Image: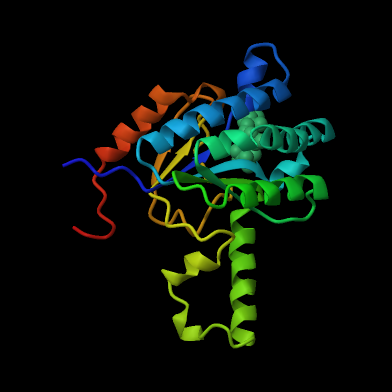
Length: 233
Ligand code: IPE
Ligand code: IPE
Ligand code: MG
């Protein structure tokens, strides 16, 4: 019997730069192509019955890139998300963001908060967009949040379990069932470390701007045919 559709899919959207360079374009053109691809493939993923889609858009480590590339991406987040706010509302998609505030500009951060607020009643599915995100940072920030709640007597220490821990993370999302990384890199790169604990991993050499519906179908087919044991014999 095939496994059912994964509830929570995560994608490390990698390879935008190489996709562009191979075509003689600028790396930033690859980021623009990646954003367009995200909108298309992400909706398709919800159509397939996936309820939660987490995507890695910008890591804390990505601030080490050139000023030009970082500025381009920050600008893209502001202009694209503002321009597309109706796209998310019309498609009934709730958009959440995960990551640290610092050193994002107020403009980027406020845009993220506005989109979250505007889409908060959308019901078809959830896009969790990770910007200025690090998996270890999330574990540390969650530990601090929990410590504060316990100190203020708002949380009983005995109520912290593997299952309840999820709701204190940046966003209260279920465990990840399937994690996809594009562009041929075979590593986690500090993505959602806690939530990935039992995820099935799928790696493809396709760069993210080419990750279309057919590519997702291949990943899904692979997932549905896996023997997911989670400790059972
Ligand atoms: C992923 O593509 C997008 C971001 C990290 C922002 P890359 O920009 O990492 O593309 P490659 O890996 O250099 O090709
Ligand atoms: C990971 O991609 C982050 C995103 C896709 C946003 P990178 O291309 O930055 O990967 P590493 O961190 O160098 O492995
Ligand atoms: Mg990369």
